[in-house]
Length: 111
Length: 244
Image (cartoon, rainbow over all chains, first blue to last red):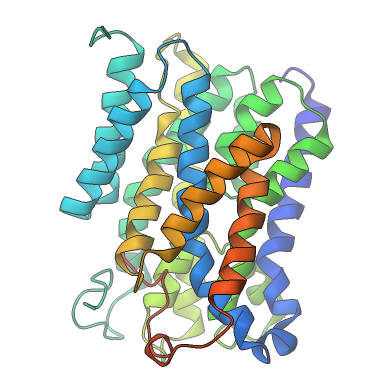
């Protein structure tokens, strides 16, 4: 993080990649609109990808420390239940982070 | 299926962009703060945290970049990770192909700003919403994100707290988006496809589990969707929901 040139290059590349992905369907608009399979895939994928990102991120968190997947499972379930129940994204995220921070900082001792 | 409540029961033109952007602000300001905080705590200068939110503007990828930059990973690896994380954005434009403003600069900015949350708001708006309103919502949403990042970075530059676990905000955001996608889906095929794909990918290629799992899910998705079902033709967009 001390090498500013490296960080600036990374930011520029990430910006270009992200913009390219967001722009792709507009560049291929005519072609895409002729292919209903693509459109149906576009309806199928968001849920699959969100689930994958969730599982992958929590799995990554679980591997970053020794207490294993328990804080991730507890906090993850908190978020899912809160969101299913109250439909309030900020509340769900804050609750989940609080549960996670509590476990990771040993405010709640893990057996 | 109940209509999303993001814009209330009467999504009339009297609703200002400001109001529509408010729920996004409630998510973006605190999340942006966490990003700015983590970026600076990892050793980055505060102004580059802000630059990231101006130039990259992709929550998940920005959270992912902090440990990658701290570890000094190669730029190609960072580019690939960004592509994998943001791959879903390829599908967002499909819902907005005919709805963006004509001037190229306004259109380019709206494409640039097409985050999960902005996409949700824009696709929930009534069809006759003016492009000026849509542009204003896009810009306001990014303003919340940049402002949050700036505040978080400035706090992080002064604070000496070592509170592990704040980065769980990213996983929590994904979980919230997954729940909302699931709520508005007509079935759970995609959920189970993803679970099984990830388990398989983790077993076969643990180093590239996410990328392989996405590829597997796309393959299964193509196979499941190969025949149009009459019941699906008028189903609402799965991302048509109130996230934040």
